[in-house]
Image 1: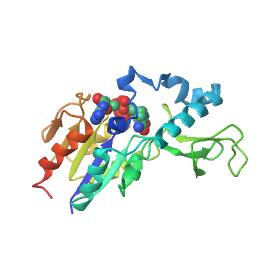
Image 2 (image 1 turned 120 degrees about the horizontal axis):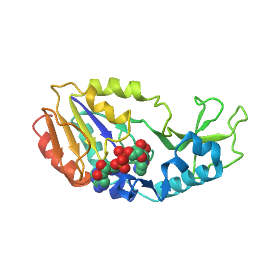
Image 3 (image 1 turned 60 degrees about the vertical axis):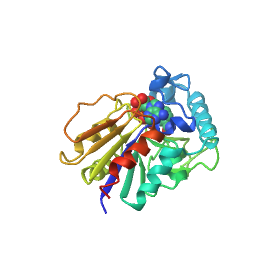
Length: 229
Ligand code: NAD
């Protein structure tokens, strides 16, 4: 079976009702990134940051995967599908995708501020001041904030290097190091990009741009791939 690797971004969840931030003028649900998604923001105002992610969890609990998420599950019949997502929502998993890694963390997990390897499930939407890890330190959202290292990057590179087909869906390719993954795709292997807007990428041979929303773009991709199972 060929390996089909997907790099997904906020755009794949847009049709589920979760806003991307590039499309909202660089704001994330009306917040500046610097106020809610950086280590400095956490040091400055833990209440604001905790509340922001509590709201994101409430929102995530109220939405469902869309046709694009389900199309990727269907492709598992024909390919070894590996999803590398920049999203912190869990819509790929809810849809049923088996192999998902989250480059930028997961909304429904918390981590110790003393030892980031201590990671816990958040069963509902709330993470509050006074919620402590087993070492007694405050729990923070298990999110890779801007300016922090991306621990899953090495494994993402390994997966990308093994791709027979690489698909980019709904990402502006503006956030590094994630955006750099496309450069690890073997030059002989095809890259497909699904996005209504042209992402910031230099075109190379074997690159196909499907200018469309994730749901209808995935339908077009399935047609393109029909002969390469
Ligand atoms: P981005 O906001 O920078 O870019 C979104 C991309 O999606 C754009 O290229 C846009 O043209 C495209 N898009 C918009 N509507 C689409 C649709 N219906 N179908 C397909 N594509 C569509 O997002 P990014 O590149 O993922 O980077 C943003 C960062 O923000 C990520 O690190 C992510 O963790 C975080 N974020 C996550 C979520 C989420 O988990 N759902 C939501 C917002 C932001």
